[in-house]
Image 1: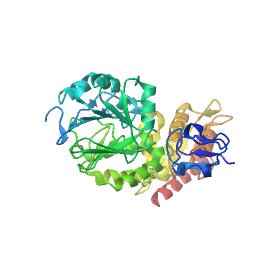
Image 2: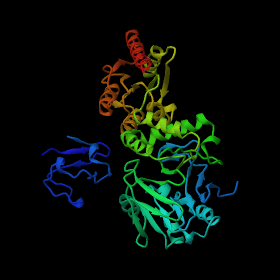
Image 3: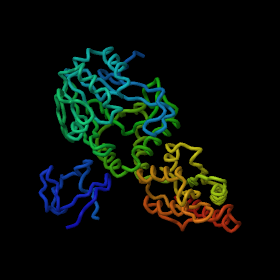
Image 4: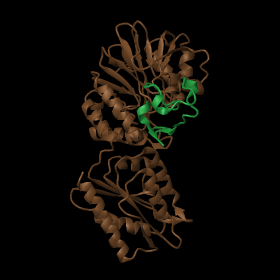
Amino acid sequence: MDKYQCQICGYIYDPAEGDPDNGVPAGTPFENLPADWVCPACGVGKENFDKI
Amino acid sequence: MSKQPQIIDGIHYVGIKDWNVRDFHGYKTIKGSSYNSYLILDEKNVLIDTVKAPFAGEFIKNIEAVIDPSKIDYVISNHTEPDHSGSMETIMKAAPNATVVATAKGKEGLSKYYDTSAWKWQVVKSGDSIQIGRRKLDFIATPMLHWPDSMFTYLAEDKLLFSMDGFGQHFSTSYLYDDEAPYDLLMYEAKKYYANILMHLGGVAKKTLDAAKELPIEIICPSHGVIWRKYIPEIVGAYYDWSVCKPEKKVLIIYDSMWGSTEIMAKAILEGATRDGIDAKLLKITANELTDLTTEVLDAAAIAVGSPTLNNGMMPTVASFLTYIQGLKPQNKPGAAFGSHGWGGGGAAGVDAWLDKIGIKKLRGPIVCIYRPAPAVIEECKKLGAELADIAAAV
C-alpha cells in the first residue's frame, strides 16, 4: 500500500500504521480515509497529500 | 481620538503598538509591529486575541479603560502563537469566568504553552457560531494559515472579518486604518509579511481567499498593522497574485563574494540582464536582510544565485539564504547557479544542487571559474543575464 505525504508539513501517512488517535485503524489505505480526514500534524485536508 | 477607539460602535481597539521591535524571530521589523486585540461589548463581552507577554500590563490597562476585565465572557484565541496568546494567562487570571474559544488544535497548542488547567473551553470548527447579543460570531477554521490552530472570526452584522495574521503587516502606527498610511509603504509591508510568513502556503491562502470571497466584507481587522477598510479589493487582489508568486518583470542576482571574483560574475549577469522595461537587481547577501531578499524573490521572474567556495562548499551566508528560501517554496522562478573557486570547487555546485531541492527550474548548469573570471566566462554570465531578462520580459 502506498504512503502519502502532506505537502504542507511533511507528515507521512503510512497505511501500515493508520492514524489510530483519530479513529483510523492500521492497514487503512489512503484512498479509504474518510473525505473529512485531515493531516494529524497540521490539520489540512486530504487534497494536500501526494503519493510518495 | 480616545485611547481605546471604537472601530465600529461597540468594538474597541485594545491592542499594543510595538514601536521598538526590530527582530521578530529573524524577520527584521524595521517599522516595528503591533499586536492587535479587539473588545466587543454586547450582552456578552468578547475579547479577540491578546498581545505579546511583555505588554500584558499595558494591555490590561487598555481593557480597563473600557470595562472591568472580569466582565469578559469569551476570549477568542484565533491563533496560538505567543505574539497573540502571550497575555492569555494574565487575562484568564483577570477574567476567571471567561470561556476560551479556539479550534481543537488551538486548545491543544495553548495547553502546551500555558497552564490552562483552570480554563473553561469552547472548541469550535468552521461553521460554528456564538450569539453574543445583537452580534453573532462565526468561526472559520484556517488550518495552516499559518499554523494548525489558526482560525478567523467573522461578524456578519458588521461585515467585519478578524483575519488574524492574514492581511497583516509588521507596521507600528499611531493611526488605525489603511487609508491613513502612505499607500506604497503599506502595500510593501503587507507584501514583505506575505513573502516571509505565508509564501509557502500559497495553496492554502488561495483556498481561504476563495472561501472568504463568499462573505460580504467591508472591514478586515488583522492581528498586526493597520485595519483594512478602503483598500480591501487591492489587498485581496494582491494576495491572489502572491498566492501563486505572480512574477513581475524583475530579475534578481543574489550572491556573496570573498575576494570579488563571484561579484564580477554577478555584475556581468546584471549587465546582460539590463534593458528597458526590466527591473534587474544586484543583491549581495551581506548587504541586504534576508527579510528583504525574500520579499524580492516573491515576485521575481528569474533568479541567479552565486556563491564562492569555502572549504569545498557554499559560503554559509548563501547556504543560509537558500535554507530560508527553501522553506518558503517560491513558485515558478527559473534560475541558475554561478560562482568562482580556487581549486576543488563546491560553492556553485552546492547552489546548483540546492536549486533542484527548491524546485527551481534550472536554465543551465552552474557557471564556474577559477579565481578571476576569464573573458569567455564573462560572456557566459552576460548571456545568462540576457536569458533571465528574456524570461522577465515575457511575463
